[in-house]
Length: 107
View (cartoon, rainbow, N blue to C red):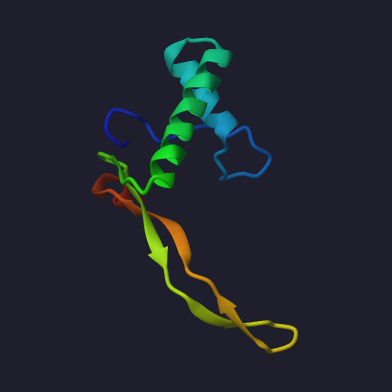
């Protein structure tokens, strides 16, 4: 249990152990009783606001869950596996996630 929310969610996805967006939407419908359309809009709004914040370089902190932030990725040199030729890897940005204490303690 993280905060007041139970972790056990039945997944409807074909692959066991994979939680997809539809599973989250269905859980919102089951917990709140709102329509599936409104739940889908709510979940989509949360994800869009997270994407927008990360694209602006902002940090997202969800107490009891974790922290998302964008970090610079170094320039590097890789190799083409087929030819063995060196390939320059350009610098970029990557989203990092650091789990919170409650999430780390899950077994």
